[in-house]
Image (cartoon, rainbow, N blue to C red; front, side):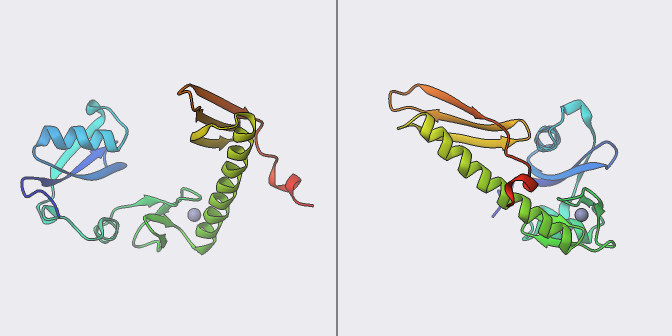
Length: 168
Ligand SMILES: [Zn+2]
């Protein structure tokens, strides 16, 4: 499943506070790829080490990382989760407990619903457009649409009302 020329490397920044594993042919390639994954510059990388054990790939990288003492942030409350603290896993996301996993799901559903609303409003404003991107944040809802003549339109609306206001 992995190019045999590629080797596994662990790339660290902030002295192990942020790390990732990459497969690359050489140290410079691993460092570049790792910095990119961590959204840092080449110079921010503090360590690059080989992990021969992973050269042939691994079925479940996250499970391997947990077994090998890596720590992660809860996707909901950002508390530290490790093999020792225990965790709830949903796909590739880790949570400190079921409550946090549930909260995240509720938020994701609310975000999807809001994006569907913003899409509908954008299509009302620019009939015939094709939605290329849609997102919403505390600053409002946004959509980028491509029209049939190839031009682009940008749609903006007010932020979603707070949850308490939407309930009867
Ligand atoms: Zn949590």
